[in-house]
Amino acid sequence: MNDSQPAWQPPVCRGIRGATTAEANTAEAILSATRELLIELIQRNGVRQEDVASVLFTTTPDLTAEYPAVAARQLGWHDAALMCMQELNIPSGLRQCIRILIHWNTTRSLTEIQHVYIRGAVSLRPERSIELPEAIKQIQVQPSQQES
Image 1 (cartoon, rainbow, N blue to C red):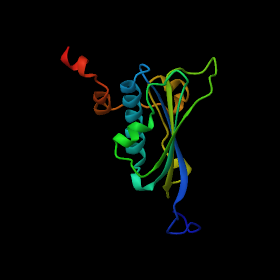
Image 2: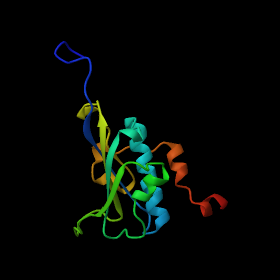
Image 3: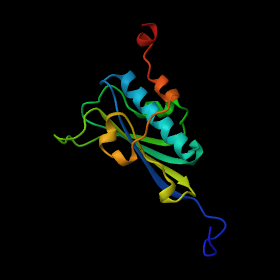
């Protein structure tokens, strides 16, 4: 901090963006991919749910089996305003894509926010793509795969 900055900064609303892809148009695949992305956004930014004002979820038109906001509710986000929408159907657009925009009350600067792009969505923002930790990858193991 330099002399021109106050010691205390009031919180402001910042946007945290992320995107991923679902393996299929099933409720399980949509929720699994959304939980994975939400967990990564939360961990990388230190998001506390009481600081979340709202979250926008979008899916491409080929994902219709479940609302991705259900994944946030499964993670305990019962008080934040959540809304799901459908993306434009752009012929050259990424398919089976889920995008998230978290409106977060924080004292962090814009440059401190970590946006996350995983799975097939790394093609959208390769400079922001991340390698998933092994623990997050384990969440994605299907019960039928564990038995094999």
